[in-house]
Image (tube, rainbow, N blue to C red; front, side):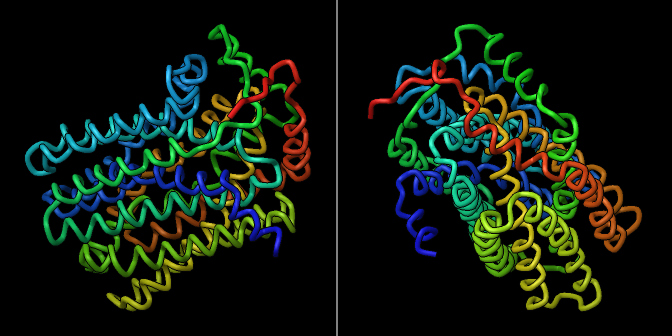
Length: 425
């Protein structure tokens, strides 16, 4: 326990937490919070489902990740320089969203949401690569947990506090306040330490695109690993695709009730879940942790069905949200730490972007499908479908038993010394 607590005093962990906040703030503003804005407007349930397509850049960020690995900004270095650029562009795009509303200009608002997602995905590319490069191997499980915790704190702000502000002062005030908070996120960019070693930037596009891909695909069971990355969180993503709409339209909760009660319940559930998940990964290893957490996060989605029987019971709602986020947080901590461990530090930007993009596929494609199932078959079928969609990821994990831990161990020593240079801080 003493060793675990000592990790929190590390500057690398503190900055990981802060950058996790910067990474998480834009997601709800182009996702759940935007969904709530559309839900409070004269927009159909099917159309709200398609709002989730704004998150497509998160799925394809590996396409331009090599460019951010190849070219180095003239300030703050290859990682932090790009982070600062993305933060500035995010503030500009978020500020522009207040010029439109879903009732009058839904397409323009959707386009700006796509821009926010694009700049946010770009920021994620370099934050993820920076975290992979700067954290020591023994810090990765807790580093993953702290990154998720920072992410969830940001989601509480942009998905909870923003709803309260919108309920009281309107949506323009909500989004402008998020712009100001996003500006504060640049502090972490300036405080971040340099990696103890850093890869010499590739001179050719081939070296940062084709070689990283070939490096990953030559590993045993590479295709199975890619499929596992896609399917492990699919059921969880499906259950969350219309969670805001479920609480607003079916349970008849107000924006303030969701923002205060539900979001705080989800926040503490995730904080406790990710921290517990990080500790258990160290004790159990990757396979056992991912298997147990995967089963729990699949079953936890069914807790929301109790609300269909009780009606607008806010204690039940808070409990359901806590349980779902606690189980999902454990799975997310193990899953994020695994992705870091699967990356060869010579190619961390591209490989992490590729794997995290694949993990976002489910979150993007299930939006329209979730809207159709909820509309045509009802909410009970919707939550049962989330359980069914969790099964393929667990089956793939069993197929990969043993291979994942062996691969993460090999990646710790895979970088050749000629690719590394010492960093002077």
